[in-house]
Length: 480
Image (cartoon, rainbow, N blue to C red; front, side, top):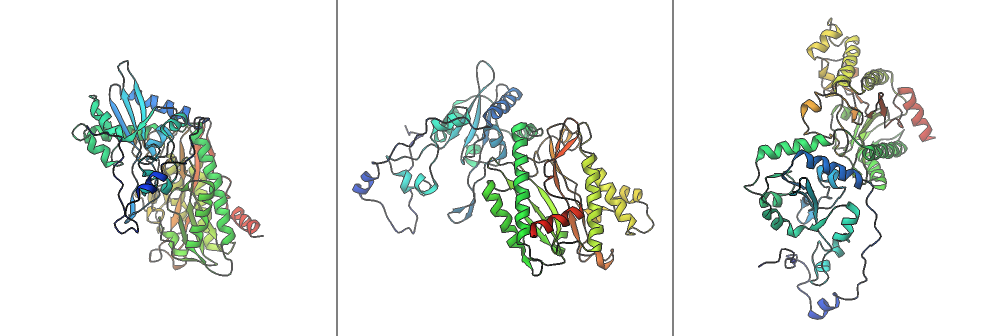
């Protein structure tokens, strides 16, 4: 019988410079290594929260086998992978960031579930895996032992190579989070249904709608680090010569890697008319004096919670008259949107408040002829220039809880502990002949991350100025 924990034969690179090893070298590499097992580990800070979250999930699916994979590395090119980022639901339930890992909730005879994390353990010294395999520890870095992970995560851990056999041994009905690990889905083939798994994904997403104190602290730090990244960008912006958008992007990325895990999403460093493209991530242009720079960026913390903040900055340090007019209209709309964020309000209220205010400004500028602002809003004509919704949930994903039940999300009420963005914008396309020429190519967005509190809301990203005169003073201070 094949041992499921046995390490497969070492695979050598096709055109590698070496072929095999001598017996003497292989024997030498087995010995002389100090014991690095860590025995005094404390649970990770969120361990109590992840245990509570797993208990809530267990209560929702009595008697069912629940499988939540972290996912596998994705190939970037040939044998080079993208930096690995585990699935958000796996992170939410375990706090673990390992690749190829799987959380399994096994139903127990007495009710409830036994939660087990299936992980890769230390790579073997005895068979040379740790130095011969290009994913061994001398190549990719030391991994925690299963015992270490049990101490850190606060739940039993097993070798992931036993997962297939353990899944096969269970006769319980199964639900699996799909699209993250093809091997897991193959091992469960014929035992799951697309409908049941889709409902499982919806439920997992809905668990994350209300943030606990650990998550709020992470988002608060993400916003603070993001503010420092914006300050870094201001310091590299040239006032008398163009600044490449990619220098802006790279400058923010340094801050994200210095204080967190990564950027939470592709940085939008959109200067001049590029700011009228909602998701401008090519970042191949120049921010010139006289331009507006729309910077939409967020630091992702080391525990994978992301900020999502936008500021529109006059590169030269001061807004032009028309730029200020558009900017102040967006600021006014954002103020209206933020004021509508409170517990018990409909989720869409902040969107309607901000969009109605934008419609009023656009109408007052004569862009819709004799139509009233009410009629413009009723017909949605303002959306030619505002384009997108005014915000979204925020958390482990930049568009968090995207698969949750609509009636609990966009059609539901706000609850204390929810975190969302408020990000109205006006975008006048360069080729839009329906607006006066001087408006064309101006794009403005202001975005902040708002926590719903028991009595109203808190702006987690308030460390960055928003009002036009405050933005100008901020730029002057940083450049001084």
